[in-house]
Amino acid sequence: MSAHQQVQHLLDFIDASPSPWHAVASIEVQLAAFQFVKLDETAKWALQPGGRYYVVRDDSSIILFIQGQKPLVEMGFKIIGAHTDSPGLRVKPNAASGTDGLLRLGVEVYGGPILATFADRDLSLAGRISYKNVQGGIASLLVKFDQPLMRLPNLAIHMNRTVNEEGLKLQKQNELPLILSALAEEQLPHDCFSALLQQQAGIGSGRILSWDLAVYDTQKGTFWGAENEFYADSQLDNLASCHAALQALLDGAVLQADSTLVCALFDHEEVGSESRRGADGSFLTDVLQRVALAAETDKEDFARALAKSFMISADMAHAYQPNFPMAYDPDHKVFVNKGPVIKVNANHRYSSESVSEAMFAEWCEQVAVPYQKYSHRSDLPCGSTIGPITSAKLGIRTVDVGNPMWAMHSIRESAGVFDHDYMIRVMKRFYSE
Ligand code: ZN
Image (tube, rainbow, N blue to C red; front, side, top):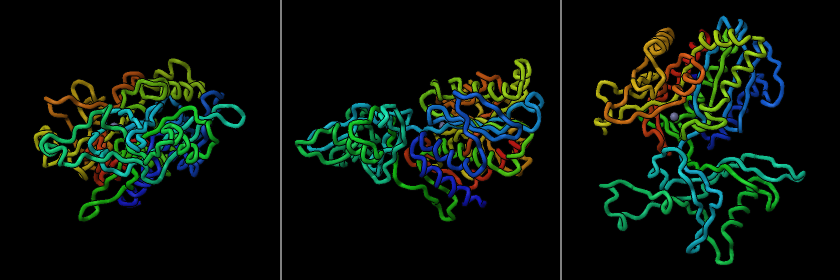
């Protein structure tokens, strides 16, 4: 595939994945063509050398693995980690309210989005609904509205005269509810919203019990730039890294590797990872332990295998935007289309250290992929990733890397076409080591 074809594949993946629950479902669809077997955490696992497996926890985190041909204790695990969630707005439980002839939905801010970018966009809803089925049991299903359903209209400049000097500030409780529809006087807001959800989900009246609903932007991904050298979409942070890791794992040569290969994609990174399905939960440890147990690896050999293991924590990086030179350390500018970024932070907001940094740089050189190094401005607090969390929990040597992008946490982010191909190439190199 050419670099542009790879990115088109990525944009199709993102557009089919407007919530972390949909991202995992989209990944499962891709896996079907590659003979991956889905494992149930409540069942006993019988794993075969060379076997391809995946486990889903709570519908929005997924761990894929391929059992190595050689013993675990000799080869260790080769892990790439990323996250399935993106910051944004989530619908509250008693969301629907009616005032002034309008039905509005109350939302909560999830993680740290740039709120102003949600104004005047063609927004809609996607997520997971739990309901009572005809047998009286509780079932869940994914729901997605394709058409623009909601909007956050800006205040006209005539009522907000300083917006260009002070920026668009949105008060989270009162100024974020989204306009969903016109409401007649006799209509009850909650009933209207429930009816809409029931109709879209195709389930009977009065049966919805709860939901996890994300607000998303219906605008599809696109290429841009004079040579189509850039692309834009929502959720590049971090579905672009999930996609790169998955494409690397599904490469023909990689699928036959000697090492046990793992691709761990977690929800909840944007809210600190501390949950049952987050990177700070037990999911990855549980899966790695069970892989080792199935191969009759004893406790000491499991510890030896972890000591031999390596993890790439892949999350997007901040590309230089020349309109804002003061936002960057002038000696650590990283550029779109100049290759994957190794992220370094002395306070360990990133897990990289000199050895893991050198190993990643060497893999890049072996496959003729350029790379860059990023360090945040010393006088600005630095973001973090799942890298420090998983490496601390498991004791696995880790490097934090990611492709350069603009407008991280905007509802419309953008990045460079060639970087995506570079990242896939170096990830394949790592997996086939
Ligand atoms: Zn991220």
